[in-house]
Image 1 (cartoon, rainbow, N blue to C red):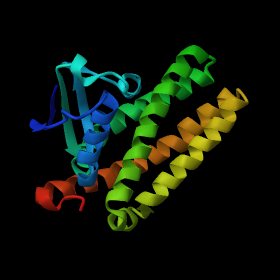
Image 2 (cartoon, rainbow, N blue to C red):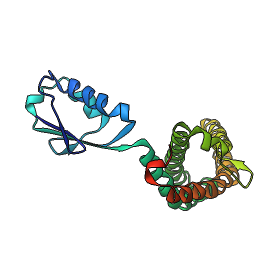
Image 3 (tube, rainbow, N blue to C red):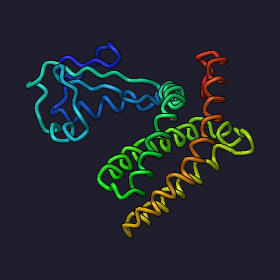
Length: 210
């Protein structure tokens, strides 16, 4: 079976099953701090659950595993750049979700609410990744009086409030939190993320987020 990581071949001839192959792949990439963005088995992308189900299979049944990775800092940089364009879309979704929930259109409101939560969770993960990669910059970045760390803390608090209201089926309260509290936080995000994007564009690639 042919195994490649970023087009570099590796020898897995002694592996007894795919589980051993997967483990060795992770052992290769983890010291570099890389993140897998694509893992294809015989040309087909496989998800994490599929990977678990295949661990006992013999490598002889398959022709190839092709892995593509990206450095964690490059992934964060991409996320920061994407976030600046995603924010206006997130703002629209939050406003539409609040309006529908307040008007009693719960089915549509809950669908939009779910979409908003997915994007908000993505932003939380991005902020967490920035903190882990460069904690000093994360703590020191203050724009218009709001540190990035405070924005993340406030977001998690609002998400907790919404979950409590959701458990009580208090959709009017959920709508109020979305419109009157989360939108304000989203607006605060815009400037710090733009600053980070501008800083990254001015720093040589080898020195970014290090």
